[in-house]
View 1: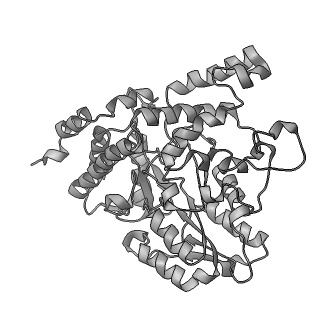
View 2 (view 1 turned 90 degrees about the vertical axis):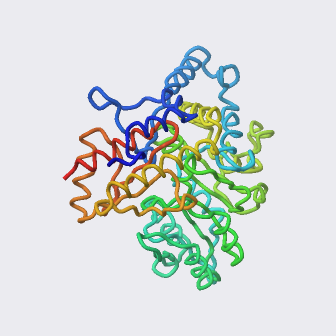
View 3 (view 1 turned 135 degrees about the vertical axis):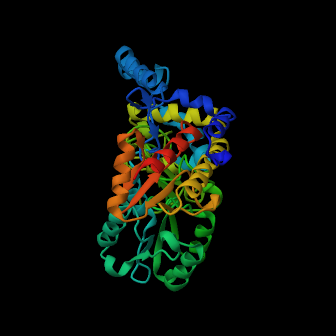
Amino acid sequence: MTHPIESEAHALALDAADPLHGFRAEFHIPRHGDEDQRYFCGNSLGLQPRAVRAALLQELDDWAALGVEAHFRGRHPWMPYHAELRAPLAELVGAEPGEVVAMNSLTANLHLMMVSFYRPTSDRPAILIEAGAFPSDRHAVESQIRFHGFDPARDLIELQPDEPNGTISLAAIERALAEHGQRIALVLWPGVQYRSGQAFDLREIARLAHAKGCVVGFDLAHAAGNLPLALHEAGADFAVWCHYKYCNAGPGAVAGCFVHARHARTDRPRFAGWWGHDQTTRFRMEPEFVPTPGAEGWQLSNPPILALAPLRVSLEIFQRAGGMPALRRKSESLTGYLEALVRARLAGRIEILTPAEPARRGCQLSLRVQGGRERGRALFEYLEARGIIGDWREPDVIRISPVPLYNRHSDILALVRAIEAWH
């Protein structure tokens, strides 16, 4: 007998009651034959908002009609363009407006932040990251350690998982800081671990690390636009993230950066560029660098308008949807529904690696197929051939991320039924 949650009527009723259901129409949903794809890959690349095309054309039209004067006279003047993003970006990540800036790419921002905030000494040279960190983060921190003349074999501390399914407890982080804290210059930690989907308590990690004298930075690539964040209150020294995943700003989108207000006028060293110079005197073209207070002081060059336009559109959608609290409510419903169906219909075939507690995860569930990598890869390709799009992470993880702005409960039911039909 079919349980009510496993019925199509139940899924459709949940979708009908969803206060955000109308936002799906604001996105281009890729097609699979005559139907929409079941797209669960927003953790890798978010879908395109329909309004992006008009926003880009507006900038092209202003460029064509106004030339350089579009810096001052366009519909969205280019000179203060990045300032239009300041307030919605701060709201997205729980920061003060002066603490955030959209610039560069994630790893470029990470390096710029480490120039200022990773200041190793012979007594305190180490960086703490999670074992299995995203390769770009590991490459970045290893190269920084070597750049400063230290040895990653000794000074890159990678904390191994201590929980079933490869997740890491807060207690393990506390133990690592108790053991190595006096040697650690920087704790660089994810908001959400990319492979497992585990979310972390950023405030507590920052508190524990600061108590040991460590600088704290967060990589929020899989957390920004996914979870409600409170970066200012969490107290990290810096954070970096991308906007092409949950923030739907397009492939290779301009990234985000946070610098806590206590560092707004820091005398820490930095790599400087003209656009980071104080706005009130920037155009005097004087040789001395006077940084703009706050995160904008780390800018190097003037912002790429054509790349920022999609982010402006996306942030406006977030605000109209009610911000992260509203998105989080639907996200918990979608991911909870997926978890319930997997446990009810796919037990013994599919293992969920992501923590069961909603507070320890975002949209994403990381799934492992019983029977090894070959069966897992076969299922992934089977789903893809049927227009059900997740993504694969080696060695054996299928990541499924129901995104609240455009995914539906009925999409999730279709996914689970497809897996049931697979042999």
